[in-house]
Image (cartoon, one colour):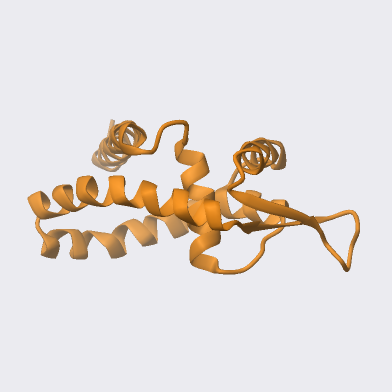
Length: 146
């Protein structure tokens, strides 16, 4: 294996392992019954401050519409989102975060922030800040080729 291939394998091995470990640690600090996918959607809706269609959410998270529908159904049953018909196109639905969803998202953040802040502190803010542009560029390259 040449150096470029070896470097690529090492990079993606580290990213995949870091992803697995981060998901595991995050799942442990989320409120009881909340899954990482639930938090991710609630966080997206809270940050956007706008309604989104299930198709828009599926695209944003790079998942199938079926997978997003499953997540949205669970969030709706929990009372964390409101789903309404799209007034312009009755075939579509629109999704918004509910007040209970905002509270659940805030509770999740309260558990997550200390854990991720500790990791950033241990690595050093300057090193994390220097790494972010590279990770963003890598994500962009993967989105382009996806």
